Length: 170
Image (tube, rainbow, N blue to C red; front, side):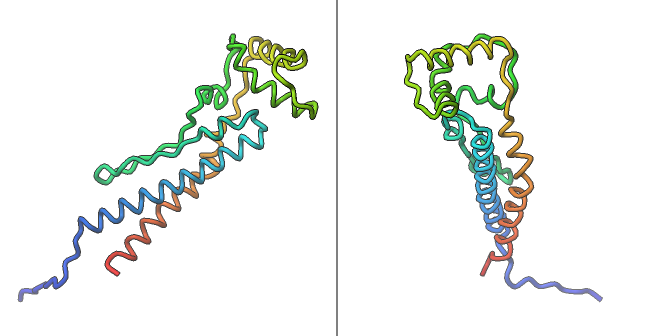
């Protein structure tokens, strides 16, 4: 005896796959934004000087390539790697300490330090000498943000994909 299977309404599997990949990309973007906010929060908690580094954080999700979804969270400030990772003692450009000294001086004294004043210049030189002698200790803001929020980001991607599957064809 032979059984017969009859499919009346065959789903468009390519459309389902596209919907799942698009939902995954949207979930990835949301997850990366959560990690971006956490990295900025870590920088604020560490009282990192000017705020420029937090403002340079950038989320990018590439257009899906087949079933692959790729996204990045990056810091575009040129000095970002030196804040993320520790550095050995080195000679940094003296001008790199201007904004740092203005903010650090204000936090220490409560008075705005104008560039070129003796106190501001002294703070610039102290910072420069410290980096020359000891290097810098990284705050590992990206790594810490990833460790704190990556599981939440993965759950969001899974949730968005499941929602796309549940809502397909409704």
